[in-house]
Image (cartoon, rainbow, N blue to C red):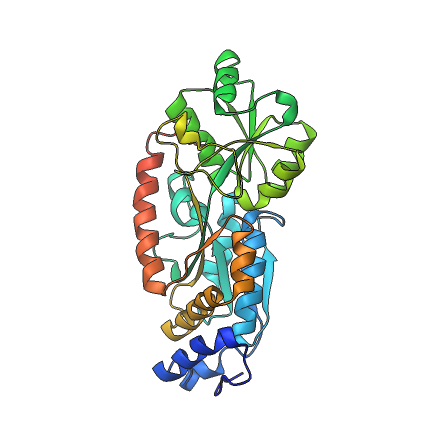
Length: 328
C-alpha cells in the first residue's frame, strides 16, 4: 500500500509520513512494503505487560503503515521459543518480536544453550517504552512493606514462594537481586506467563510475585494484591504511597524495557519506517495517555539508538547476573 500523500491521514501521522517521503524511504521496493499483514510475536502468554503493550503498539503501527499488525503469543523457555521463531523468520519486515530484557540480555547468562545469538540474530527496530517493576504480596500474608517481607523471609528461610513469568524474566531477576542484596532465602516458582503467576498470587497459592507495574495496577487498586515496593529510584505517580525498594535495600533498582526487533538482515528502510511509526505515538495524545495510564514511558528513537541500548544492557546484565544463582 504505497503512501504518496499524507493529506488523508490523521494529523498526528502527517509529519512522520512527510519525513519518510522526503528521505526516500517510501520509494522503490520499500514502497511495496507492507503489502500483507505483519506478524508481531509476543514471547509470553496473554495478559502480561508485554502482551498489553504489544497490542497497543500493533494498533498504532498498523494505522501508521496502513496494514494490519497481528499479535501472536508464543510463550515458553523464558521467551526463547518466541524469540527463536523470529530469529529464524525471513528478514522481510513481516515478522517482528516484542522483546524484553529476557531473551535479549538476560537469557544468555541463564540458559546453558540458546537457540539464537542475542547479539547477532536480530535487527534493532524501535525502543518502545520503559516500565517500572513492583514487588507484590497476597494480602493474607499480613505484609505491608519491604521491611515486613525481609523480616518474614529471615524468620522462615525458604518458606516464602515467589512467582514470576518464568526463569530469566525480569520478575525472576527481581527475586534474585533481592536475595543477593538483602541476603534472604525465598523460593522461586516459575510460570508460563504473568497472568498465571498473578492468578496463583490472588488465590493464595504463592505469597509473593515480581511483576511490571502495568499489569499489576488493576489488582493493586482493587486490593486483590498488595504492592510492597517499586523497583525504581523514585516513587511512582501511579502508585502513590508505595516507596522504592531501594530505600530499604540499597541498590535495588530494576526497570524493564520493551523493544521491537526483527530478524537480522531486515532492510534498514523497513526498520526505519517502523521506528518512525512508533515515534509518531508521541504526537498522538490518545496513545500517550494509554501508555502513561499503565505507568509506562514512551521512548522511541531510530534503530541505531536501540542497537546501542541493547549492547549496553547485555553488558549490564552480565555484571548483574555474574553472582546470581539461576537455573540453566
